[in-house]
Length: 339
Image (cartoon, rainbow, N blue to C red; front, side, top):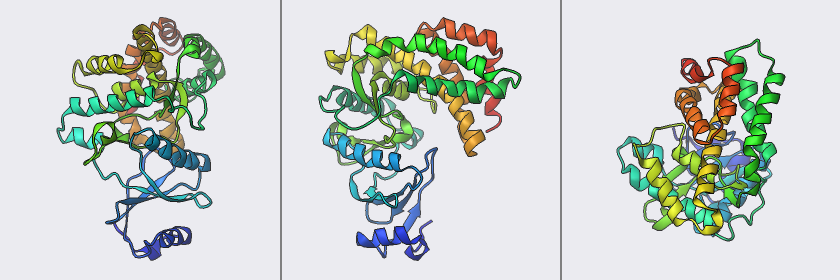
């Protein structure tokens, strides 16, 4: 609901006044899993972004938004920023997220083709990695799968020694992820899914694909974002669409991205890693942050994890879970009841 400017805290009021918006109405937007908040500046085509708790994430958002636009992709343009108070005035892409469009019956294939083409641009652009971001190295990947150990495992069996379980689990994942050390580097946005993609009217080519929530970007294996898109926790794709989009991607990426077999192997491996992380992440969001809504996705993610472990040839990890955590395959359905 729109509110008058005097309700704002002084830093925000001063910031907006500095940009000639002292009389503008504001409409708060729903929050997500991040610490940022947004208000629509009514009638101005702009959003007020606030993030006072994560200065590194704030800086990364500003930096990567400008970088992605320079690559010919569409991130929100930055109209003004003040890192001292964690405020920014950014372009408002409207309400046309992929999630909303798909729910309204928009052409699924067309939306996914556009997103694949945007990834091809990102992964094939020679300047894409020329930005200051962390490296998505094995330690970071292992820390992510360890969230399964530290958050999901206690939900299923409080008697398990978490340290012992995680030591064995992490060792298996270190071995599994070792081939990624030789993967070509790419700019990975890490949350490339339907809630962070938008269809922008009046733009053509890959510019019509609006990108959101990219401040956690890293340099790593490109196939991570491909798996985020095509094995989305939020929805099932139409039968055959995942295969069709993989073929579209494989036909378009440059040879520098690797062979077909290498790309597909990394795709399945990173899908398995991502689903494993989300199994723990969604429990953490519930227990630590009070955000239980993500548990509704758990049945799908649990199924996707099992499928991806098989596709990536990670039978050893599945066997470990069967031996140490009986019932893990049903965890998604069980935890969804808590949402």
